[in-house]
Image 1 (cartoon, rainbow, N blue to C red):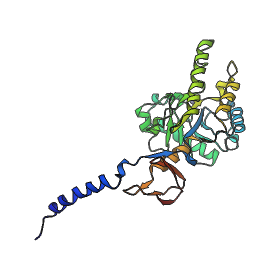
Image 2 (cartoon, protein in one colour; image 1 turned 90 degrees about the vertical axis):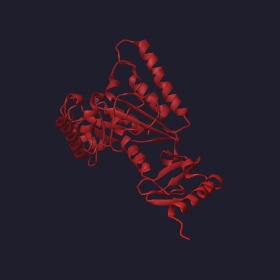
Image 3 (tube, rainbow, N blue to C red; image 1 turned 90 degrees about the horizontal axis):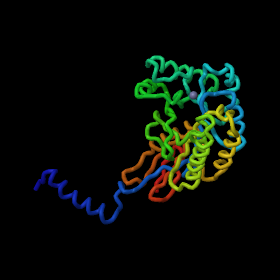
Image 4 (cartoon, protein in one colour; image 1 turned 180 degrees about the vertical axis):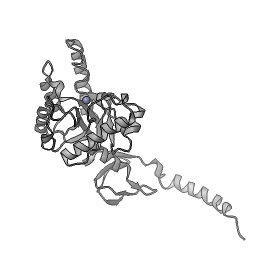
Length: 308
Ligand SMILES: [Zn+2]
């Protein structure tokens, strides 16, 4: 006797369910979490804008503490008074990231799309010429962006764009072209002249967030942004910056990274291939990826497939 195919399927389906429930764990209940490189649960991004001459002092300090920075530069401002010279960019930022901050630092929301494209592509092209590397990151000048700006920069080879909208948390932004950092350097201390009460409160808030990051146990990204030139203002801001560096540097459980390196890592993680039962994992990228699967840590080496 010939049974119609739907009848056979109806007979089969309940037995498949029975097997899933009783003997093996459903693959959809297996929890996969990303870890940072080397299996670390914390990462630190330090991101500074404008490329003024105070970057020299900041980079020197960061190098002393073994920290990595992401520096957003305006190429048309280089070689002018108060800014870095074009000749020093490649050497100064060795080991750090150089990234777009537009060619001339206009508020991008005020510009027609064509001018936004010009500001980004022109800056990208010149910074690539100066560094001899691909430049794929960006910070919005004045933090100014809207949907039109995001649309205009899409397709220009920009893989993330940082805002100035502090999130006061440690999560990884979902939309890389609207990347809110964790906090401005020292919070909003020193924003207003002669307001030492506010400065004290903001500094306390900043160090509280840093302390929370240092004791965090779940996956946490601290992303601090600012400007080297701010440290030349009144008070002991360079000492403050060094204090902050002392706290966060040389920790074995923190991954120190440029922003673009972290973006590349996250993209490679999202591009992992899993078998249906999640026991075979394939990493087609050129980056070693670390994951936590059902509370066990695994490394999936670059260009390889593991069976667990
Ligand atoms: Zn700026």
